[in-house]
Image (cartoon, helix red, strand yellow):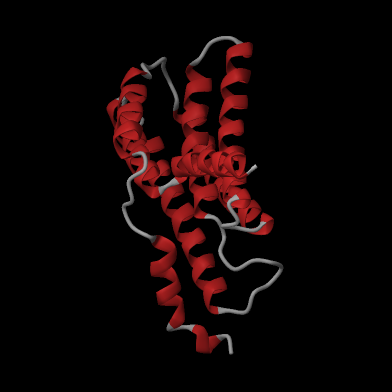
Length: 200
């Protein structure tokens, strides 16, 4: 029984690392570089805006709830959930848009949703976040993704190659998976300590 529990925890930990900053930040840079390479400059600008809004809004809520009393089982909105929704959702959006055939597009979108939900669920099952925190993270990421999607679908004017995006993304995930860039939650919790008196 203990072996099964350890195995499950191992799988969940492996899955949740796909939402680490060490993986997502390089993928964000790859998406930006690819958009510039295919000359979707307006979409590239909206990609930056979407990422910044997602990160800033998630970080601001973390600061607020770290420093203020816990409300509705909410003290630390999931950054893994919000950024994973945006990044993996954007990659699947681009892939589905450039793919032919409704069945293939359905498979791509379903697979992306499954990955995002799995990463979010891993945060919940590892007892890192509550249901409300994970749900809020997904909500933030979805809004940011919708912002980027609206621009990308309007800006797209030609068929383009996805090979550079795939190769760079795959290589960076393999290179950065399991690494730790920084602990944003610890940093934000320390910063929030300076503002706790505003909520007292």
